[in-house]
Length: 428
Image (cartoon, rainbow, N blue to C red; front, side, top):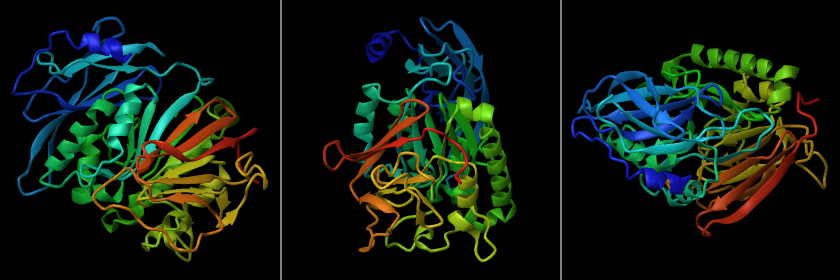
């Protein structure tokens, strides 16, 4: 694919200093025949347009343009363009350019996800990657060049912070990830570092399926045999949202899980995987929510235990949960209500009786690492403060493999496990 792209890059491209597309990134639509393209221009330009196709730029799609004014004193202004590419050919390499119909970006390429549910999918997962000390970024780019992933899942906290320097740090971050995000869908959830100006940088810069304007900042989508749910843990911590936003998200989450758990849907997407920024459990020593016995994310509102995420995830048989926020990596044993529910002593991740949690927040940022407590909780299986990121390979309906890459150790795999589920569904 990349040799093919290199040849195509010699095709002439029209540029204009007035409205050069930049910060180009992809995200999945509702199925394998759709892909969102999002980009920015620093000057006003309308008629958001993408040319795309398999062997030529024979298809044209138009989208929307939104004026985005950062909340800082400089009122840094740019224009965010969103176009949905439809009628993609599943499993095929597509080339594309974006612009205003006259001025276009350079040529990019991506591979559409194959159709059907009986396919394997590959992802890289991480959170907490900044513009400064983004140690994992060069290695991730090498992985992309080697065609290792079908999607990136960035589990909150971008740039540190996107609003810094009047939003210009956000621009720098989006430019830095463009070689990755313009080639592979870059799926996200908000973190605490996105909260400035009511999360406006996050809402405007990213386009996610089913929530194109980013208003609620939670959504779900399917990739082959996987149903992925992205939640917004920050509703519990920023009081300006009020009580209604976490209530609405909880109601949406239960409805989404109910639908995903229907036998006909679970047959197509047997794996249910979630991502959210702040974890339910962690063994770090920084006094974050996950270090508390009654974590807000886990049990909900203290004492009355309303809106707790753990109970509803257990009820509908969520298989795997990815978190970040802690600048470290930690793999848990299958756990529910702080008790371990391994499949067996010899094969803990074979038919476990509770969800598996993985915290992957060590991609690299200006705040360095979060150390661990000296004592290890019974539910903690492995932990590391190495910079790095997580890879996941969903082979089929029964086997899923996860490994942790250490960038400190030159790409060495420092941890891995195979999650095997002969049957998916609610835990007894």
